[in-house]
Length: 208
Image (cartoon, rainbow, N blue to C red; front, top):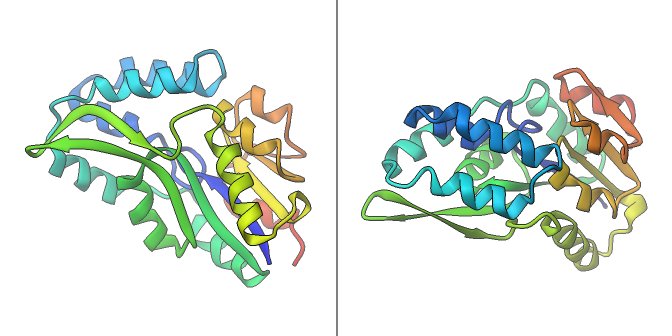
């Protein structure tokens, strides 16, 4: 058995969930700027996440559900996941984003698990608060080590793939490190760099 862990936003999904939600509120540009600072490693991930989510306060929860159920998957995602599973990989998603987005994608793609954060809602509206497994810059690496220990999987049997600075922590614990349409800060730590929006390109580098 082997393990493949993918980031969600701008990796398995073509775009940033929070940017789609912010566009609905007319604050897309403001939120996108903070996202870019965080993904490029210039802003603490926790601070950027809580700041951006606070800006969504008051948004209708059902509208959030509807948007997140229809996020565009990255080209090649539907083909890549079953191909890796046939090679013996468990395929998992780690996201600093939201379970409301990762879970519908998990069902569509047939992922083995998804780990992400939860947007707090009360009385049908977002409260601007968030909690969950993936709140900090180190969270993905921390969760990866836990899963490796649980499954008895080594770093040599682990593939990780992401695009931004908050993926660095999981890159530290895997021998196969894919930077997918990624920021320079992540490319420096990768041993596979793919600059085309086609996840099936990963299969060129992976053996069963």
